[in-house]
Amino acid sequence: SIVLILSAFFSWLGARFLAYESPQGALFIARNTLIAALTCGLFLRYAYLDFLAKQREKAELSSRIEALQSRIRPHFLFNSMNSIASLISSKPEQAENAVLDLSELFRATLNTKNSYVTIREELKLCEKYLNIEGLRLGERLKLEWQIEDQVLNFLIPPLTLQPLVENAIYHGIQPIPEGGTIRFEAYLKQKTIYLLISNPVSSKEQTRHGNQIALGNIADRLAALYSDQALIKTSKLDDVFTTTLRLPARTSR
Image (cartoon, rainbow, N blue to C red):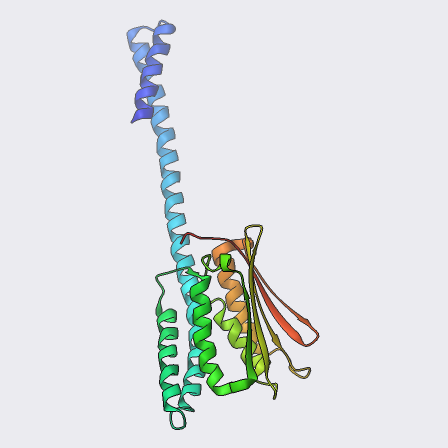
């Protein structure tokens, strides 16, 4: 409406400046106003279609992320329940505590409302999982934490670290008779968060298909949420396998 009013007003000024007669001046104003109306109509149509496309893309992205997250859930929940089942008869109190930890894991995996959680919350979820596995592995499982306090309140996608911890146990600690140490490291560098999880690997251990599935799922989720701003990579040096996550520092959900 504003564009049409301005177009008609300046057309009227132009008609007066050019000294058009009444019929010719009215035709001049009407023609310019019609051209402005058609131009605005095309622009509004384009804006509306662009809005619909972005809404559809947002909905598809949300569905894709939720689907990728749901592919991770059964993998560690079933293994955790097996660990608890082995403790019910011999260590009922520890089994009960493990059930409580598992309930927290269920709550986290069933929560699809939040696209992000704090690193503090994700690490607590990892601790719940490690408590369950610690009952099965005992002294074979050792932990080392090097977490900067300043990174704890930054946001990451939920269930990002837990599958990596599971990989560290099943492809690292479990095949080694004497076990080993899982090392966690998190620090902030130039507005970028670095998260590293390291574990020993047997010289005979080969990368399993399940390991690649979990890493692939996380890589897909990071690509969907961060595009090319996030990176996940793995490396092996002196029988130590390390997974590194590089994410942009984010504090608002």
